[in-house]
Image 1 (cartoon, rainbow, N blue to C red):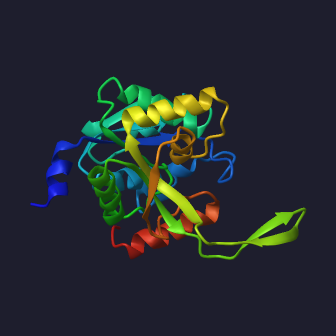
Image 2 (cartoon, rainbow, N blue to C red):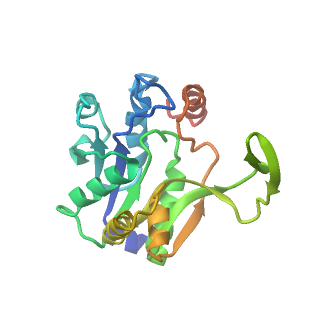
Length: 239
């Protein structure tokens, strides 16, 4: 047995899924995580993927008016926990981490994953978890930027931005529970704009690595992304 396999057997993994957002870019009236692909909601597909890992449990941070989530047929439903989400994604994540602190150790690892990323591969999940545990570090899935980038002001191109060293962040983003909770609290107390977990860790001076992900790990943001997710899931032979 490889050394990291022994380590993984001793590590407790948890997942946090912020699912309280309004998703206004997708629709003013419909939540993207509850759209259906092959008789399952996007959120159910997402939870299916996360459970490819040996999770101790997963926490869904949901809105106060959400009447759907607790009635869905989640994979490993006995591991499901729910907490109240917050005004923004970062507040939902922090609420979930504080909930987890009641049942998990600060040294346990947490993977924070977008509710509307149902196409993340089991291989990528394992690579990320193995990487963090082997190196005792925080890391995220990300892909190198491929397209030419333009800096634009008032619809006029000002200059071309070099793609060298630029990566597009994805989720999951993984760190130890206590480290991530403290970093988010510090950033919020300092009025720092937190767009993902890595940005909170960066602000706290904590090293964060990247594990190369896949371009098919899309986040459903706009309505046409839903059809793309259908095609990706079909091509991954999971339907």
